[in-house]
Amino acid sequence: MSVAAANVQPEVKVSRLAVFWHSQIGKKFVMAVTGILMLLFLIGHLLGNLQAFAGPVKFNAYAEFLHNARGLVYTTRLVMLVALVLHATAGIQLYLQSRAARPIRYAEPLAATSAVASRTMIWTGLLTLSFVIYHLLDLTVGWSLVHAQYQEPSGGQMFAYQNLVSTFRNWGKVLFYGASLVGLGLHLSHGLYSMFQSIGFRQPLWTPGIQKAAVILAVVLAAAYIAIPTGAVVGFIRL
Image (cartoon, rainbow, N blue to C red):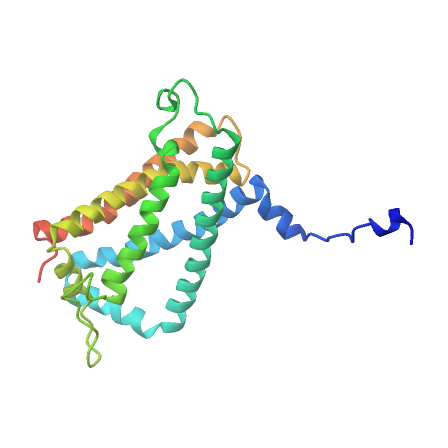
């Protein structure tokens, strides 16, 4: 066997999906699609949670519906988990690639030329991820170290409303929820605009309108979510 033949390496086949994922365009597209899924979930989750303002009967009936619709709930959780993992992984990898491509910071601070939301995307994203985990432990799992007064469903009776009220008796939680939801609003304000860019809406004529719409939607969603712990604090949501 000749030396040239011996040095021939077998051809490694790389799937198109892998090539797509490892490209910046692919990661941004994945973030856009998963972002859309999570936005739809945020809107649906908000509409359900706002029923707390209608009182314990209405809110606990909503919780009972979810408790009985296990197939729907677990399917949604699985889809959201996959979307969250893909979104976070792609975002962190893009951030690290950007840092590696620019190891030396600009002499002029970016604060002068870049919006706060775009400059803090990685940090508001990580804050939101931490908040999601904490929120699940607090009001879904009811982990005693996070929510000592959590009441499990008993005899077909739901205590979702009571758990909501009891958790926001803790000012530390209220402040953490508020800060996290402000971070979510910042993340959404830039993320929604970037999402449209990633899926091809790049017409200069549309850009200002898309940016304004993204900010308005982000503010409305964040404010509506913040209204729930605020309502518990000021007494609109009470036992």
